[in-house]
Image (cartoon, rainbow, N blue to C red; front, side):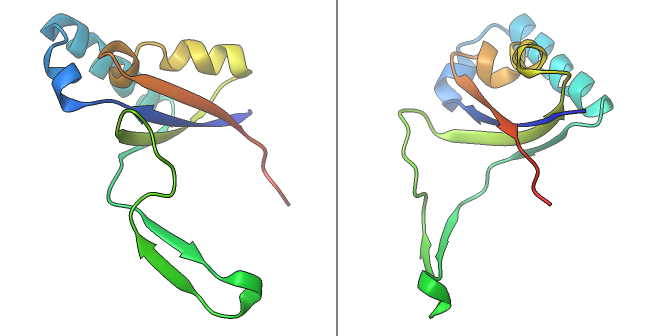
Length: 110
C-alpha cells in the first residue's frame, strides 16, 4: 500500500482555543491512525547536516525550512491513494486546531 509522510504545523495558542470536543475527536483520529499502523511523533529540535561532495560534515542547529506556524509533528501513514491520505489526516489535531497538515507521497527507492 502506498505510504505518505505528513507534516503537521500548529501553534499551542491555536490548539488551546479549539473546543475540547473538537480536540478529543482529533486525538481519537490520531489513535485510529496509530491502530492502522501509522508512525507518529512530535517534532524535536532539528539539526541540519551537510557534507559537500563528501569532503567534510557540517552541522548547524535549527531548521532549514521556515513556516508561519511551528512544525508540531510528523507521521508516516498508509493509504490507497492521495485522496484517501488527505481524508485520513483531515481530522487530526493540527488540521482541526487552526493549523495545517502537509501530505507528501513517499516514493520509495531501491
